[in-house]
Image (tube, rainbow, N blue to C red; front, side):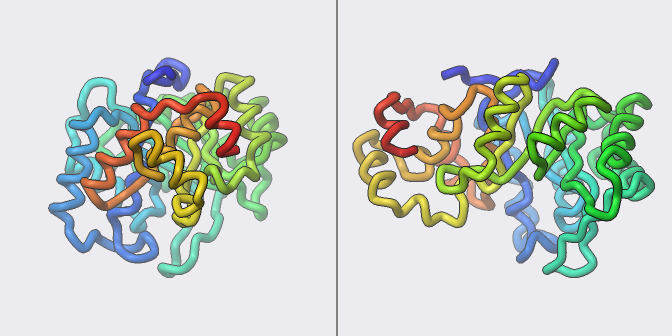
Length: 274
């Protein structure tokens, strides 16, 4: 298994880090242990992670600040990906707002919080049913033209929407929910693989129920691994363009997740899991 992945001209480790889980309940507000969150981010980099995923809406406007506090000036080769196009009026709400003017405000805020002149990978968090999809994607294309965004990504999209967006701007990545027990976007994974587009599965371990399945538990025992490592290893084997971004607030769980890159699954084992 290849240990790196190319996102156009960016080379990243096959296992990224989803940074949102350090925040308060419902991904709202400051971490309960801010110093611990900083240590966690730095430890991830020490363990070889060079791709962090975040969003303007995480906090909101908190997670990006933490990443910059922990890691700026960023190490050579480090890639931070952030997302735009949601609004959080309350902790329980994630409302779409992908109007170009809102995306512009999100961009300028993210640049400031992340202490960057150009965001390596800027992703539309979700299509907004109230805004024509080409208008939202067109805004990101404009940001790229201005040099404030290096590459454009999408999240929570269908194959049809991916193809529609590709007619407007080169698409470097797609981030959809996907895991061993949530296969609704198999067609998107296949499309990204065929097109050479990175696929970032969010919620890669689901709600944890898959880790209790007898087949996973038994295979993990046979491989001298943990169920979480097997589930992540399955994602890594699913396609060479898959870049899992498991998140955690625990340094121990971080180290466990990173161990998934050392778990090799045979074709027969993959068939059993699938």
